[in-house]
Structure formats: structure tokens, C-alpha cells
Image (cartoon, rainbow, N blue to C red; front, side, top):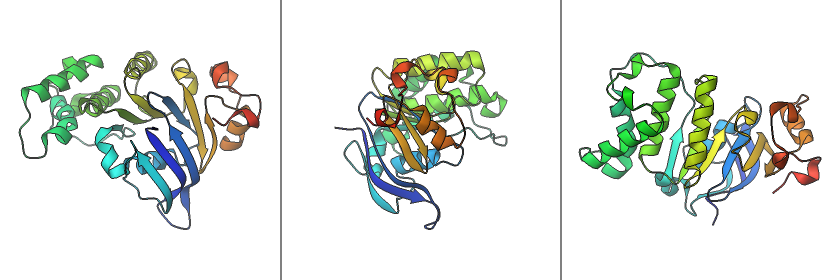
Length: 253
């Protein structure tokens, strides 16, 4: 069974201007998929459709063989980081929010919940931040906290929308290594503009610009150039040969 299955999905925010159109995409269990494409190409919209936060105009979506609304209890989501105003909440409180799916909104957090939250902070090298307020953290530290929140709910699928955008270069490599380790037991789908940085970990790539331009474990320079609307040399971006195709016929998996 595929973890994610989209068939002929068209969705967006205005019926006459869909953000994605006729997209068919499948993600297998324990895949590590990078979703690439130009700004405004529909990458974030795709994630929202998978989460059930956006209802498609047409087509079908299944997550773990169920509707997105039912399947998302098994999904952890890390949205794009957006700087926010001061808010007096601690890191531990934020990470514990990821446990709400198992505790419900009324029951108090248990010692098990707190242990799991601290475990995820430790995994991301952020356990020393547990007692700090979110407005005291750097952008990179905040992003690690949001990822820990997503993982604290023990998801089987992790969706990330440019998660390393606020993390420095050294921290990014450490973060990608953590994702690769997590991928041994959970499926990862990540929107990114930097395929080269994660090329040694990625198993498949989906290239999207409103429509799906390529999908599979090989990637064509021609398809990516078409999607971005400008020349794009994959080798110079560090993409390995196993995700590089020589022509359009080799891109679809």
C-alpha cells in the first residue's frame, strides 16, 4: 500500500486559477521524497492537500489508504518558518502540543508525554532549550523546536516545507543526517530548493510547477529546466547520477 496516493488532483484557492492541476503522485512506505519546483509552483499547496487542509476541486487523495482527514493522525507536519511576534510560551510547551492527538484537548499531559517531548528535543540537539521561551530563540532553534513538535506525536509520515531555510549550513547537514536516520522507520516528504544538500539521502524526487513535471527515482535536466523556466544544470547542484536521467523518457517512476 502506498502511504500517499493522489489521482488527477486539481486544487488551489480560486477555482479559475488552480495552484496544482491534474497531479497524480504516489509515495511508498519509507520513501524519502524531495519536492522541488519554482516559487509559486504549488509545492506548499500539495502538502496542504495531503494533510486535508485544502479540499481539491477534483481528483482523489488517500493517506494510508484513508481520506486525508482520517489519515493525518499518522502525519507530522512542519510548515514553513514564519517569524512571529513575542509570545510567552516555552519550548517544552510547544513540543508537547504535538502530543495533543494522543492526549485529547482535555486530559493533562502525562509523564510519558513529557518524556517523549524531551526525547525529540534531545534527538535534534535542542534539549538544553526546553525551559526557554520561544521568543528567546534564533530562527534555526525555533525550526528545530517545530520539528520536535511534529515528531513527538510519533508519526509514520513526516511532511516538511523547507525546514532548513532558517538553519545555518553546519546545522543543515546535521539536520539532514537526522532526517536520514528517521527515514529508516518513517516516510519523509520534504519541500526544498536545495536538492544537492540532501542528494545522498533522497530516494525519489517530484518536480512540480502547477503540473507534475517528473516523479520517480530519476530526474531529467530537461524536465527541471522546463519546470523552472530557465536553464538548470543538475550536476552543478550536486544531484547524484541515481536521480539524474538523460531525457524525458527516464523521469517517470
